[in-house]
Structure formats: C-alpha cells, structure tokens
Image 1: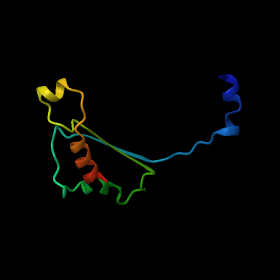
Image 2: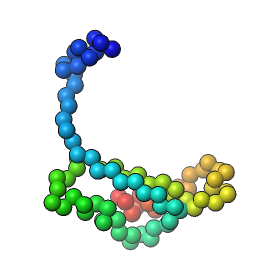
Image 3: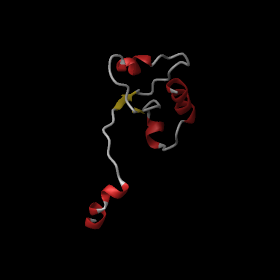
Image 4: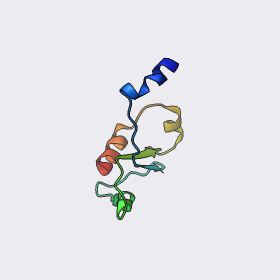
Length: 86
C-alpha cells in the first residue's frame, strides 16, 4: 500500500468536479409517458453545469404483500421510468 501511494503521481490525477445527485422515492407511482421531470434538472440555470448527474429512484412498484414477498423486478415499471427520465 505504501509503495503504491509513493508512486501515485505516476498514474493518478485529481480534479474537482461538480456532481448533481437527486433521489426520489416514487412509492409505486406510474408516470404517464408525457410526465415532465424538467423541474428536477433546470436547477443549473445561473450555475455551472455538473459533469456528472445521478438520478436514483426507489419503490418503482406498489408496495403490497405480493411485491414485498417476491423478488422479481417489474420490467414494465422500470422501462416506463427509463422512458420518462431518458
């Protein structure tokens, strides 16, 4: 570990970067195809635009007994959110 640290400047560089991170518990909400998320991303006006944007969502499916017991992924819900976000 000390040997790697000693040679760190040979293989590593460091820069300050701006990261925007948003998390949202959607609670099983199913967005319509025209759902507008621009309010989450227009916060950069008058500021430097971040180099990295991370958008995390949780509870894509309704929390009911079946969904709590099974570990399957609801691909349709995942795709619906991906379509809205991307």
